[in-house]
Length: 579
Image (cartoon, rainbow, N blue to C red):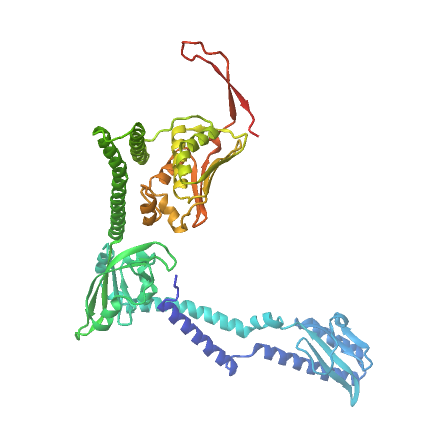
């Protein structure tokens, strides 16, 4: 908060001026010097005692001299002790604790606390009169600060400051331009929801209403006389302004309408209020403009809604583009197996097959294409269920090692055709997993299929699995393939997203694989982590919470199956520690 208002600045200036005049008066001697007067009185007292003592010493009346010194010490409160010292240093007469209070002096020049005057008997040096006084004040910095002159200046300055503040408060109130506006008109202006400002040609505020004061958390009267640029103005992007819109109105007298900017309560405040600024020149009696009237409409909600609408439009456009890209890729993905199915079916219908082996090859192609179409449809259905929040888990006990082997077996032919080696690295005491076996199987198949697809001939794929009771269950698939650039990792985890269009054309795919795996893992309460280095390979790690780790179980037959009947075996579960 800026406390240096116009009244404060004038008050401080007048106070400093008064203090300066007072100090000049002190230095030229217009004020009595109390300290000097006291010291002068002490010197005269000492000289009077010395003259009187010289007369008594000349008359050899030492006893009377003692009586005189005692009377002087008792009558003067500032005089602590007195004594007559002989030239040989012996203290002839002592009044009070003079021996303890007196400090050795190097010459006849005395301090302000103690004085020393020669005592003569005729022309003979008989001794020295010594007087010890109370100190006149503290020494050093504190002594200077507590001196009468400094205390006088401080008292007069403080008094002047208070008087000037009260006086100027009354006077400036009458000179305040806002007071030229009748009270009822000011009250009406304060009830307006829009902010109002009137500035002069120097861009200083001469009138502000209550709405503006509320926005900047200041009393409108405290804004008077301040530069309008002192307020925390920002542009529509929240950046500081180099030039203000009303400056052109101040310079040229032109009207400004519809300019949007912001204002903060303070320079460091993060909350910005959006305002629509209108500026109109204020004309004087001679027809020349004297200032600018600025009206500020609060359009914060409108601007917020506008930004949200813009974001929604961008999101909708991105979603529409993603949908279009997905439909284009999906049509290609569906068209390829459909062409194979229809083509080979037509061949079989017309009997163009020449042998049983050729017919079997056509049927296998039709079957493979049908499975591919079914997988696409399942992926789309699973994604729609997950996005609709309708996906459900089928909880069961899963032998992870057997699950991995099954997935590798299903993809062995594809891996052999690609000349890619697939291996398992799992602990021998691998615990079981509690979850949905079908979802995890499909997720692992997706990961292995992607790894085979993007790993060149001669590469390797490693499936790792490990868990300990109380810790995460970790499954990972690592390949030595082409890898993914860091800037594309987030994109491939988005539904319908793929790292690069070149990869899409060369390796095919709908972009549903990794997002679906990520969704499957999150349904189990886990996380998916993707790490990749271009040209070196990719590692996809699935982490499932400790609550899904189950110690390894052994299934033993208790009752043998009877021939010709349904299997009525009972099973007994024996827990084996997983290490």
